[in-house]
Image (cartoon, rainbow, N blue to C red; front, side, top):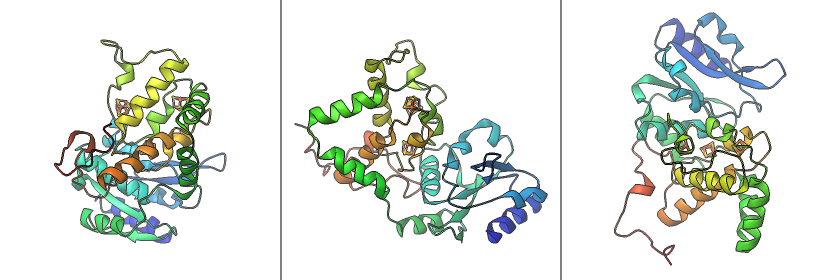
Amino acid sequence: MINLVSRADELLESKAVQVVIGYEAGSTGKARPAFITDPSKTGSLIFDDRCVQNLAVYLTKKEVRYFGKAAIVATLPIMRSIMMLISEQQVFAENIVVLGVSAEGKYIDIAGIEVMQQYIATCDLGNPAKDQETLAMLNKMSTQQKFDFWQKELSKCIKCYACRQACPMCYCTRCAVECNQPQWIPVQSNLHGNTDWHILRAMHLAGRCISCGECGRACPVNIPCHLLTMHMADQVHNYFNVYAGTTDKMSSVMSTFEPNDKESFIQ
Ligand code: SF4
Ligand code: SF4
Ligand code: SF4
């Protein structure tokens, strides 16, 4: 990734950005996020199969904003997350430089939001193939079988909220689960409250999930919670022909009505 390193170096050296968000090798051999502010440190940037974390989650963190303008290493899910965050006015295009990386791991020059939009339009935006297989298996189940599957999975949930913290779209300063006046979701981890939590989160992510899988990867007890939000992404595509994160002017699917919307789900 010589191009990535040299571009990061150039951006920091010229003070066009104050921080580069990318990946570096961690002490256990895994890739970890890197926040580079010194041009002499850009050599530690890596990009390989280990670099899967959705780095867009850091764009809304005050500790990262504090640095100033950011350049961010961005694969397709990260580009789509950035589009959603701009659409929802959580970040501003003029404060971000995108260091694109293709599915083949090659550096792509993303000169601006229009270029990123054009690149996204050339990509397959469906859920990842391995998740599509599991979703298809779940869709074939009866309602009772699906309910049993999810009750078994959600009974393991310890309400640590790592799934929420890892998701770029869960940027709320006060999540609904932390409200106690009124208290929508029980605080304690029990099957009833865990189910409520995951239904609430899936609904909040409907039309906003860009299918990165980060919430499922973050779960310490291996609950495939990304399948719930990916299922909603499929539903939104089927009913409204919309994929999240394709432009910087996405309408909110859950609060926008078009007279020709399909209403076949209302029974
Ligand atoms: S897959 Fe999970 S982490 Fe990624 S955007 Fe969807 S809900 Fe958020
Ligand atoms: S679950 Fe809902 S309320 Fe909580 S952070 Fe995510 S989007 Fe916000
Ligand atoms: S990361 Fe896993 S255990 Fe933690 S709240 Fe999410 S689903 Fe539950």
